[in-house]
Image 1 (tube, rainbow, N blue to C red):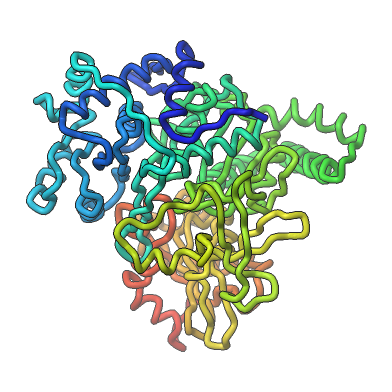
Image 2: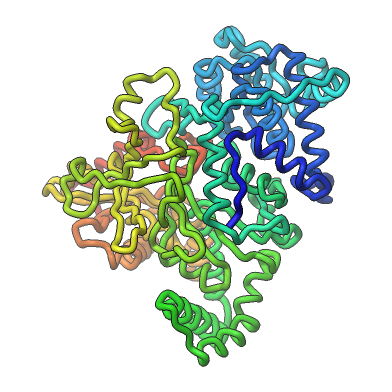
Length: 601
């Protein structure tokens, strides 16, 4: 294991610059060709932009906000801010403008970096409501030296400014939660919150090397992407290619050939779904061979967990890996070794499926408030279906007084990773912390006999049916989303006699099925009302939830022609459902599902 220790983000910057100068760090596609920034060039840009920010009036402790998707400029601005002793406040391009206004105003940002002129014009239109904002700096565009990233870089190169040493306890980042139930809350993370979490990964995971490469599509504006990908890989000397568009992901995987994929379960679900659909179109022989590959891989894994091996299984795997699994891995560039999942619990079915292709899955757990790593699976301590064990310096306890359950309780997190608090929200802080400084996660779970944490749901999302039985909707929704006909789903039944499901069909799969049945697919609303389609989804929902408790299974459903997205404000930028917004949008239709006349049952 590595003996590296970082107490501040400035430590990471200095050590990585000194150790990995000529190596590639950040890559982006320019006119169809991948261009790379070395560690040395990145450090030079950071130094120049830091000096440019000083020239623009930014001082230690000031807030520097950013509204942008991932790009090298984002990372340069990030480290320029941290090494100036200022505070970085990231936001998503996909957020609602009202959220940008609230966050810029609440944080007191003096400067905001924006991805393009379109966002700049929106922020400029809010200037009268943002009294502390002095500069809007465009990554692309802008004419004057105070408006353009390039101009600020040039200005800084002409007037250097020294790196500022921060204390571990100094505030480094204000990362605003997505606000599924109200206004975003500013999570205050110190330099040591983030740097010690990076250090903890070095202590438990020796599988990463400077030769590793990732393809970044998780937003760095979210703490998972920023800490576990950007800062961790920077500290290792590894490289990161920035994915330019979601629809280019598979194409970019083949070119970039990453060794590590950082993603949330939604992405892994899509990979699983795509491979399942592809296999369904193959011959019976190929399908059987693929299933046998999965079976042999699973048997090998089960024996390995007991410390055992089978010569016959090893021989079979050597052949099947060459014939089948390696061919699938080639679609991802052929070098993929690790799949790192976080953000929410990955389905055991999906996790095992990917793992059985020879891509080792490591799942972790955390929140923005825990910087984010609270637990993780790692070499020698891995159990699919769990979110692992706490790293050094972190402790987990289960508070069963909250749930009244003999096994499940609220997960309470203690350690160096726990935030300083919510910005300017003393009442929220009083609710969030225990008397001894533990953070109340709001998540339910238990620790098994071997010390692995199992997540069972979110306390706020748990509800009671009319009969008094408790339901946790997320596992039911995840089961539904594994069905090839279902792209998205939300389950609800709070204070109702039974659960219902709001289903977003996978339109490509549905249209293909409908065309084979001779149905008209020109009008989606009419197609979704078709009795044959209703019958199809009744059967698919029953099949997807066959392992769900009887009282939890959705009894009726509504087919939606529109997905839940950030654009329609039904999803947070980190891909969590905004349940309140969705229920308000479809309240009348959901109420109708409970009428005796409803036929969607």
